Amino acid sequence: MPGAVKLLLAAALLSGGDAQAAPPGWELVWQDEFDGPAIDLSKWELEDNCWGGGNHEQQCYTPRRDRQPGANAWLADGLLHIVARRETWTGPASPEGRDGATATLPYTSARLRTKGRQEWTFGRFEIRAKLPAGQGSWPAIWMLPSGSPHGRWAASGEIDIMEAVNLGTPSDMPGAAPGTPETRVHGTLHYGRPPPGNVHAGTWHVLPGGANPADGFHVYALEWEQDEIRWYVDGVHYASQRAENWYSQRQDARGGWIDAPPGAPFDAASKFHLLLNLAVGGDWAGKVNATGIDPAAYPQAMQVDYVRVYRCGAGHADGSGCATRDPAAQQVVPERPKP
Image (cartoon, rainbow, N blue to C red; front, top):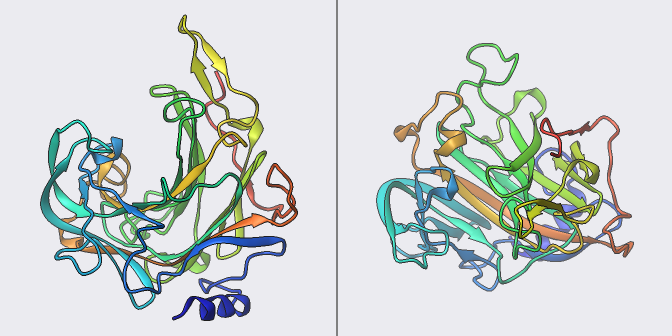
C-alpha cells in the first residue's frame, strides 16, 4: 500500500488496532511506511552481534535482510518482518563488534536502529505492529540515547515504548486465574546510575476483552515532553511518568555522586534514536511465565506496519503543548526512590 494511501486511511480509521490519525497539534516529521522493495538503509541500521543484549539473551542479531538467504528482516506486503529463528550462529561478542571476540548462540533475529541516521528530543512516537507469541519471545519498540550526555547506561536513560514477553503462555500476572494466557504489554523508563545503581519504573496494559497482541495489529505510541512521558495503546492513554520521579547521577573524581540537572536524563540535552527488535530468552523472558525458551515455538515474527514520529506544532521548546491525557491513566511512581 503506498505511503500516501496509508496516511489517507490513517485520517479515517480511529479505533482498535487500525492506523490512527495523530491527535490535534502533532506534525509528522519522520516516517517509514515499509512499502518499498527493501529496508531503507538511510533510515535503519541492522545490528550484527551475539552479545546477548547485556542480559543473557539467546539470539545473535544478524545483518541478513531482504532477499539474502536466511534473512532475519525484510519487507513484504507493506510490512517490516523481523523474524527469530532457531539456528546456531556465531558473531561479535560485543555490541559494536570492535574487540574481535566472538560468541555462538542458538537463535538468530534482527535489531534495527536509527542511530547515526535520525535522533529526536521530545515528540510523539507511533508504531503499528503485530507481536510474536511463545515462551522466550521478547519483542521491543524502544529508544536509547545516541550519546551519553549524562553518563553511561542507565544514567543517560532508556525509553521503552512497548515490550512484551511470552505472549500466549500461562500468565503470571497478579490475580490471573490459572491458565490465563499472557497478554500484557509494558511501558518502562530506565535511569539513575550505571549498574548496579540503575533503576527502572513502568507498568503494563491489557487490551479490551483479553485480546492477545500477537493475534492482530495494534498502535503503540509514546508522547515525550521534558517534564512528562505518556504511553498509549490504540489511542488509550494508560500510563504517565513525571520528571520529579526520574533522575540521573554521575560520579565525581572522588567517587561521590553528583545530580544531573532537573529533568535529566529525558531532557533537552538528550537525543534518542529508535530501535525495533525481537529478542529470545534472557533475564526477563526466560525467567517468567513458563520460564526458559520453547524451541518448538520458533520461528516467530514481529510485523511492523509503520513508524511515525511527530513534533508538537505548538513549538514549545520543552515539547509541551500537544498532550493527550486521560485522568484515569496510571501515574507511575518508582518503587525505588532517588538515593
